[in-house]
Length: 145
Image (cartoon, rainbow, N blue to C red; front, side, top):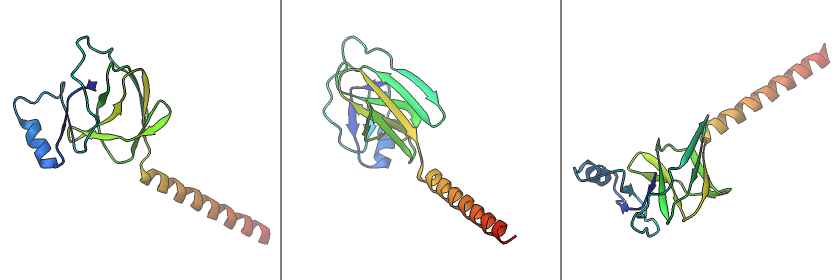
C-alpha cells in the first residue's frame, strides 16, 4: 500500500505506544524511525492497487503512486532484505516497528525486495571452501595411489 502520511518517531517504545492508540490507523499512516521526504495528502482518487508477486526470497511489486509515497509491504522487516527500485538499489525502511517499505517518487515503478542474509552468503562460502578442500585431498590421494 502507498502511504501518504508518515510519522517519524525515533524511539521503538514510543512507536509501539503511538501505534497502540485507538486513533492509530495503519491504513493511513506509517510510523518510521528516520526522517522521510515530505509527503502530500493522499490523492482524492485512490492509486491503482500495487501488483505483488511472491517467489522464494523475492517479492516483486509494480506500483504507480500519483505523488511521492512510502510503499509499505505487510511483510516483516528482517536484516538481510534489500530493495531495488527500477533497477537501482534503494534504502529499505522499517515501518510500523515490524514491516518493511521503500520510498517512491510519483509514477510507475518496479520494486524488487530480495532476501540475501549475510549468514547465507557465509554458509555458501564455507561450503564451497570445504568442497574445494575435499577435492584437493581426493586429487592428492589419487596421485599417490
